[in-house]
Amino acid sequence: MWGQPQSVPGSYQPWQSRSLTFEPLKSCHRDVESDSSSTGGAETESDGLIFVGKEENIKKSQRITAKINGREIVVFYHEGKFHALDSRCYHEGGPLCRGEIEDIDGQACIVCPWHKFKITLETGEGLYEGINPLEPSPTPKWQSKGVKQRIHKVTIDNGNVYVSPPDLSVSFDSDYFAEKYKNGGELAMGKQSHSEVTE
Picture 1: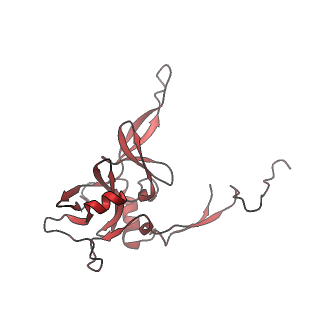
Picture 2: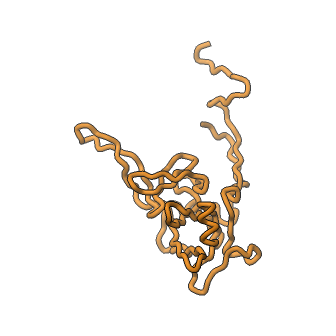
Picture 3: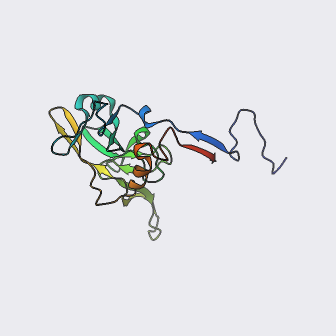
């Protein structure tokens, strides 16, 4: 039958709607909470730095998530360096803690697991592959969209890893989803349910 979609039992049909429920970020790795004395894992120092974990533990796990005043961040340890970013992708709020790290033109990038957006760990720049149509034989090259993802300064002291609180006087695209997911907000993972999601 031409023009009529055929259903195969037990298979996904792209025209069907689905309801998705997402797991909490806690399943990514160990969570710490800076604004809760009950966790005992994170504390704010007198200089404003926020303790997020022991250096050796983060090196072993390669990444952890943490909450800084309700804001979810992810701390990566990659090729001898620590990096901290907002944990939600600037594009649609995907959980970056579940993404793969790839080298793109010599830059370590986290790839969002939802839509494959690429973000540099060092600067928070969004990258895309584009061409210059004016070139005789255009070839795709990686280019920057500018800084899209908020990064957080990481400090190591006596085997402890600290993150600086964000400077909110400057805004980034990722701030939108950081606020939406803050403190278990309306889009908090585990509470979010998408109905009528199609692929």
